[in-house]
Length: 396
Image (cartoon, rainbow, N blue to C red; front, side, top):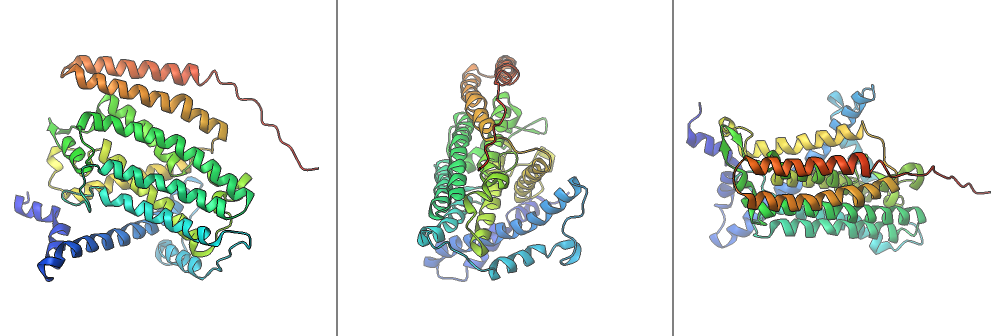
């Protein structure tokens, strides 16, 4: 077994490396240099992770669909992201003559910047957070709301009816499910009593019989996590909620009129948002950087954080290759008639859990309430919805 000082150094290796690098500068410049160094790491790390994820996703979908996936560019196709990047940089950037050029240009930049800002408050390991603010969760959702503005900017500035329809559809979807995303996080705030993400992780960093006190292992935490996962999938426009990019009816949604590097920025922003929202979900419900068993705490905390993040990405890819796309009416009905009411009920169950005190009674009562309502709403209420057949109209 490794000695505790060695374990601590492995856990804090990036923190120690940062302190060593900035120690060569004057004391007055060290805080600024430390922030800039952390920003550079985030800006380089997650796009690199995005490049690898695109390869893994293509290979994973290939396996699901009984084909090979990328296998020509580089060993095992792992240079495919480089080829894609070169293609995006060299393609002609076409802007419609009637488009609002400044807004058309700014939309993808606003999207990527807003997503990157969310990484600033995510604790990626013990003592590994760029900005440890008391209202970190509030800051995260404030930045996340900016992505809806960028989507509308892209659709409106293109002067294309398909782009505008795709943007309006995307904004309606994102607002609907962002309410659920916020409310599912409120349950965690009610129990932990803080909006600080590092403190939320610390509240879960306890063990009983080698098992962690993660919030997902409680009735309200499991229900909140399921609602969060559904809302996160819709918020990032992933299957089966990828209606803003329904190519069979909208060509490519709000980025129909984008090409070249600006389109690549939208593509990058979507994957970065997926990483960010997966990291937040791991922080809120899965203990963040904490180990799943007390005897595994010797493994560096940052490894646990990124393991949970990549596991979430695997589930996203798995769902994309498995589930068909929903219709727009099914999507909105599901949001307002099932997910949102159940999330509001979960808040009341969370309050009940908080004030019933310790004991097995609250496990039975809270679990029973959630299970009964889940069955009633899912099996009876949603199945009573009669969706009429589609009617198709063709141009004469």
